[in-house]
Structure formats: C-alpha cells, structure tokens
Image 1 (tube, helix red, strand yellow):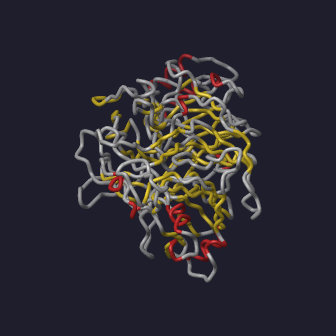
Image 2 (cartoon, one colour):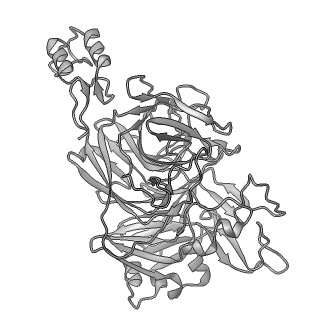
Image 3 (spheres, helix red, strand yellow):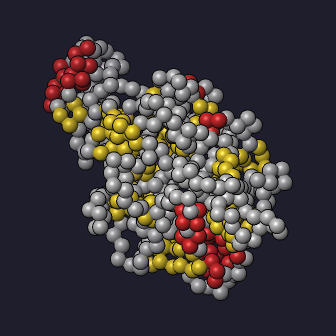
Length: 558
C-alpha cells in the first residue's frame, strides 16, 4: 500500500500541531492534495417549509420511495464526559419514536414505539443507538445497538457499571431486527395494523450466540453474505476514563476486531441467519469502532470493503492506516512503519460517506462529507488536535487496488475537492455550524450494494440526501471555548458532476503554471504517448506550449 505524494502546488504539506498526542498509530499523515479529483462535489441545504423536522443522530435509517424512515438513535448531541453514567447518556434521549419524512410533500409522520404491541424490552432495543444496519428496497435490517433497559438484575446481583443500578442498565443488544418498510410507514402514519407484524426480532445462530451483540460498526451486503464489520460490545454505563471515576464494577468493553459473516434472506419471513465465519486471528490493529467502512470494488467482478482511519488505539489515539477487506472477508493492513504507507488523519469519525467506482480508471473514490478528525482545516491551514474536533470540509480518498491479496500494490491518495457544507451561523454563539458526523446518507441514484458508478455520471447529478447527525457550533478545537453540540434536523442535497476540463493542467493541481510549463519543455519533441501532449496529437511541440500559456492561471471551478 503506497500513498501518492506528488509535491506540487496545491498539496497541503504543513500542519500546526501544538496538541499532538502520542497515542496515535503513526506520528505522521499522508499529504492532502488540493484538487486532482475527476469529479466535482456540491452540498446544498434543501429548503423546507413543511412540518417541523425531528432532530436525530446515529439512527438506523432507510429510504422507501419518497419517504425517509428513522428508527432509534439519539435526539441530543455528543454524549457528556463525566462520572455520571445516566447524565452522559440520558435515557430519555434515546429515540423512542419512529419518524417518517415525506420529502416530496414536506410532511413528517411520527409515532412512539410504546403505541405499538411490542414488549418494553423490544421497544428499548429498537430505540438503541449506533446499530449496524443495511437496507434494500423493501427492508431495514438492524443488528445490536447500545441502549438503556428498565430491567431488574438477577436475584442478589447488580448490573455492571456505575452507578450500581438495581432497576435498569445500559447494554449492547444481541438481536437482529428486520423491518418491513412499507408496513412500518403505514403503521407510523396511523393505520390499524400491529407493529409486530412489520418488525421481526431474530436471535443469533447457535454457532455464534454473540454474533449480533455489537455497536459502532458497519453492516454490509457483499454478494449474498452479510458482513458485520468491526465495532465493539459495551455493557454498562459510560464514564469518562480520563476523569478518574471511582467504580468497583467498571463497564465491560470488547472490540470484535473481526469481519463476521452470515447469510439471511430478508424477503423470506421464515428465513433464519446462518453463520458463515469470522476473522480467526483477530489482529490488534482491527480494534476500531465509529469509523467509515465502505464497500469497494477490486475489479469489475470482485467486491470487498475498506475500513478507513478511526478510533481508538489502546493509548486512546487514532488509527491512521486503512484496513482493506478482501472479497473473501479477510483483512489486511499495510506496514504502519513504512513512510510510503497511506495514513489518514482528516474526517476519521463516522460520518456521511459514499464510494464511487470508475472502471475506466480502475479506482475507487471514497467521499467523506465532513465529520470529525484529528486533522481539521481552518482558513487554509491544517490543525492537529487529539480531541478530534469538527470539520465541514469534504475529503475524497482514492483507492486503486493492486493485485488481489497483495496490499503493497494498492495505490492511495487523499484530496480536497473544494467542497464544504454551506455556511450556516449559530445565532447564539455567532459560530459556523459544522456538520457530517453521524449523519444519515440516503442515495437517490442507482447503485450496486452502495457502490456508485462514477463513469455513468456525465452531467451534474443529485446523488443523495443527507440528514440529521451531530452539529457543532464551531470546530470545538482544544484552543477554543467549548460549544454545546446538538442533534441536527437539517436536510442537504449532495450533487456530483464531472470535473471541468482544464487544458494545460498537466500536474492536475487545479491550476496551470510553471510546473506544467517545465513538463512541456522537458518532453519537447516527444512522440507517441507523452504526458505533455496537451492537444493529443502525439507530439509535444509549440501547439502544446501555446495551450499552456493561454490557460495560465487557476482552472475554472464551475
């Protein structure tokens, strides 16, 4: 695995790092190139004059026709960091309502789970946050989730975690939930059906009874297998590990460090999950959660996934080197000590993200739409901050697979495609809102199990809606006064368009300048396939030189 480090005008090389932390997987990061992206990205807020939109983040969600469906998640911002577990994750802020947003007619339908016929335990299970989930045209399949349950412990015992609760607990649920979207929408709109007729609760197979007890990972469908990628199990209330909170029975946390695979047919009401396998020797570098894991192509026939940078190392730093997940579910990570290995520090936390595959270029382009990162951009300068502040900028990561099972052949680079969220000011603080983290992304274009065909986008195209998530007034860097975060209720439209041709920009850095002129002079007289053959007439001569001089300056943006 190697990174592209072409030191051209526009490449971001330097960072300000007064708060560098030693707990990271690596001390350095790969350069971020300004531009050199084969497409343009724009994000625009969707005007909304209809019903009041709900605030929600970390929800399970699906799009069904012109309806957006949300189950579970949280209705507040980032959890608190104190010695009060109930205060850190207020039980009342788990989302106990199913929301259906009709974005064509600007209507919002909502119905509390308690109005249905499910048990109290099942309602709390559905209200949990950070489930692993996947949706197709008709179903939303959800696994695990972290939540709060009113339940007395076994006789003479108590639940783990602090405070020592006697009538409730925080836990990671261990079931799979399969929701029929049409039925759930009808129930939410007020029909007389039973909610239990639209949502199935399914236990894990006997071969792996804790298969579904996970939160903070990603669920993918690869060919005919469901993959539960990374994440962790957390039993007990959350306490700030840096605050020295006294607790005789601390919460239990176990990272899966695994790709766990099973088969299941959501269309068959009698289908039961069949365990296929999991990572046999769980590597320490797979100790990751709350990160972006995206399906990718290795070629036209083979699909797998990539787990990008994420949290947390044993030293409470960030993982910087991506994990490639091959078509058979095996994981690989390049040598983190190799200076040529790709290392990411920008937009590392789970956020709205999507992957585009170009068969013409034989490469994937993963687009990360804001979020949180160890690196953040402020007025053109990169800052490093171990508190992982907020970002409005879009990051595009290029992954060109090499030979299968040979991670050293993979080619990586990361880019700023000159796109960020619209500037929206928080009235109370006067700071710019920052979006992206834990947002819902709902595609509106055809895709192959959430891999989008870049080669078919030949004109500006609306590709997805993004909704909700955590919103932060300002970046909340360590050198700034902390601002309370919230769950958002804003909806945005994501558009992708082909890159605008820029004749003469041989270095693909977004401008035509001295570097391009030097390449023309260096290849003067070259015939055949030549980098400096700007007009594609198979010779580098005065006509190529004239194009470079004519186009001198910045490339057009629109």
